[in-house]
Length: 443
Ligand SMILES: Cc1cc2nc3c(=O)[nH]c(=O)nc-3n(C[C@H](O)[C@H](O)[C@H](O)COP(=O)(O)OP(=O)(O)OC[C@H]3O[C@@H](n4cnc5c(N)ncnc54)[C@H](O)[C@@H]3O)c2cc1C
Image 1: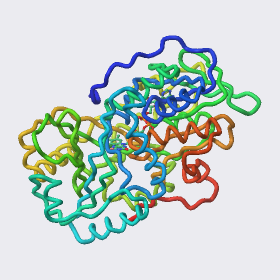
Image 2: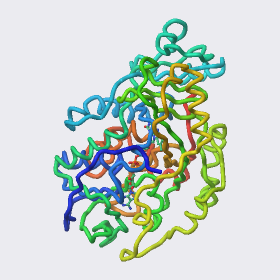
Image 3: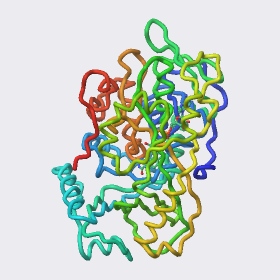
Image 4: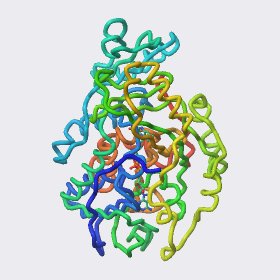
């Protein structure tokens, strides 16, 4: 079941013997980190086990949003919106970014009150977000047939094209001097005198003094082999795209049942807002208690199931030696089957809300495994126990939008530059230093 079609990316061919920094993972986080480092004159190698943006970074909804997420992410996300606005010029490539705005609709008085409460998180930030009703709402949702009574409009938010943006960033990183190798899994870390001294890849050894793990859904497995515990699970989300449609909303719409946004090709990307599937796997048992607060909060949007993933992950090696083939080489691209039920209900909800969509065809669908942490905040952090090791992962369904700034922050940590924002909320040690962690919705 192939994911979205991706442009060709020209991999470098020869593995360098030594660089300053190795980035593991060619999703948007790894690519943005590599670009930042290369622009600062750091010699950098990015290793991607499969294809650039083959996993989450090309499969997401393409929403670039400040609103309705954990308020602790606001400073980093505000920086990311600035970076997105200049990204096409900076990279010399198309990203599809446009500030189309997002409408978070309220169908009930309770939801309306929640959205009004969330809006207060933006007080003083001058982002222009506001509640809209009546004619204004009707103009923003042309032809809608929903019971929306009001909506939070966030004009600073927007969308970009997941099948373009990471390629643009990785291409610019390469042009700035970064070496980028696809089909090149990093197997393990090497240390000398208690700090990072290199990595072993499937194609040989590379000496370096810094490693950034941006391995998306694989980061826990990779770090576990190095003795570093990262609480991280995966959630399946299923997405479809339509053929081009004349008319329909330009502004992305998030309702109780639906997430929908216009695409650069004139179609829509559509998903059911509630059909998120949590496959029960051995890690669910190991980490279950850490995730209880987020399960409690999100239970309406989660479906737990026992599937083949239990067998697949139970059979996966959790420890290996540098000369051994690793799970990263055995699965070049994580390509889960989408849930047919989620696709059906998402498409039915979209056509009901916007009858105009009945003129469109479903052109493609795919699944994506979202990597999540127990508090739904990313880890952008050095590893306290291993100097030279940095982690940028666990973006919990928000990494596409926040990616450019997350890459900048990760690069700041590597180079010791003044951090773009306070990195403390994102430190890895929050899961082990007695901090009371858990998701905050800001509602
Ligand atoms: C269906 C879906 C909808 C989403 N919608 C949105 C949205 O609208 N807005 C938003 O902001 N976010 C959204 N997200 C989340 C967003 O896509 C992710 O947070 C983001 O793409 C994470 O980027 P990443 O670089 O950390 O991970 P990934 O894109 O998953 O990249 C990690 C890469 O690391 C590689 N890798 C792993 N281990 C190794 C190794 N040992 N050696 C070499 N390579 C390795 C993998 O092959 C992979 O390509 C969504 C996600 C999904 C799945």
